[in-house]
Image (cartoon, rainbow, N blue to C red; front, side, top):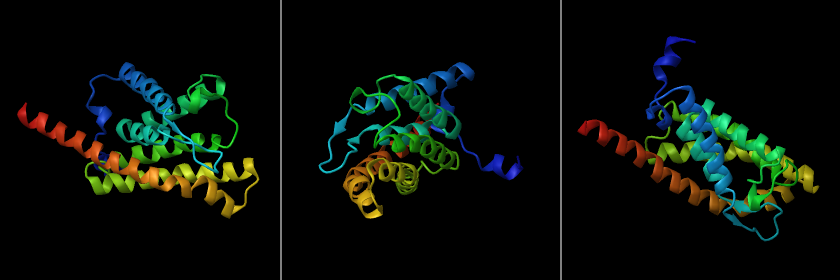
Length: 196
């Protein structure tokens, strides 16, 4: 690893929690559980086999707050446990099949991506956080959309119509929420450190 890459790494929010291995395991399990809880916030999307849920927001928030390794591990745990039968996918479902499965696989890549960007300070301002969340959403769609198209027998136009366009407004709202929450958390950290 070069000295440049080490010097450019900034702490992510999880790095501020004291501890090491036990802390990391707790954060990974908590991140997966938080995503499972957020998956139960479900809004059916008319004409789409994929519902809108809170799990995309949770996956990106977990990735950003925990960093690429812990965030990616949390989403991998979420994926593997759900595939093995833990009923924490949307509507209490489990198993890695159906139109939504590709999006869930995409969470692993998205969490790692936004976590890596957060380690470069991409979660410190609203604009940078919004850009980070957009890239995370693109990573989810890069896996989820082809899976949806294959599982539902859709062409590209049908995939975009059923698996992307109906979700853009919800994604924008989730991005706006994250762009407020994460920089606010960092502002609080700076204030606490200043007062110490």
